[in-house]
Image (cartoon, rainbow, N blue to C red; front, side, top):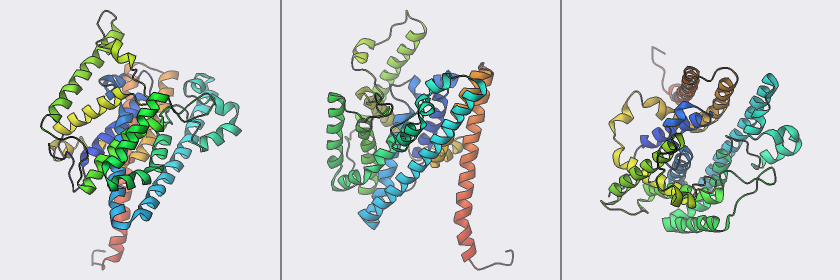
Length: 386
């Protein structure tokens, strides 16, 4: 099996699937959204969170690995922490907007359900403590738990990157060992209130991030760290298909009890815990990723289709679109809860959300292109038409 990722050029698959995961996150964050039946978690034991973290690790190693080789460890680390700061500022800004949204909703409709459902009650009861905990990333309302995870993972990434430079096993083996210890001993990071822990445990999710980083770094080093062989893709496709059938049987069983839920007892014995990234979730995601790579090549025609462009555009501006999607998801939840929740309104809410996300991504792309063209135009000699 050849390396599944190109050594040169931009891989539009990363942008496409990252953009798709942002749409899935928006959909899944609206409770009782009918489109939730068509997102990843409906057919797999993993969901958009795994996609987001894996691709984040992949692109981080690709971008900062090249910087490390061209400019050295000091500048590469400085660039990483610049990005950490951007993520932190975005998280704090998003946190304040999110709290304001919920506060307005509670005041407008006198419905305290939102404070409990979205885990912001403690902030409204003791804001002087909660705001400090929020700045320390320990207070994480619902929907606002994946950016803190990404901040922590990127914060320790300079060490991972240096380990990858020595060889992929220098990063993968310690990461796997830490993951195994977390599963064995239940280690976690404390959150606020005191009885809580991080919903996405960084000590566990770092393993998927490092796997993604190892794959991304291979584009820099040429050292592919994972098994090869003609058997691998068929195995991944078969395993993915099998787990889709199992997952769908559970879904149908939930709707109609007489239908058997395949392998429910043995699989549930090991749990499908999202907080500590249960092994079944990793296995399912990696099988799905390999199956996807098998069928979707870097030069796949659909990546150049006009219909794929908006998704790719959102994936290229993922931080902004993620934050916007969180804000829009609560707005959609509020509209469906307080006004009208029938299928036509759900369709409208989803379409409006998609349009705003795509429109924002297009605006950001236009601004970036215009800013890049500005200095070039100003430095070029004037022509009669100018």
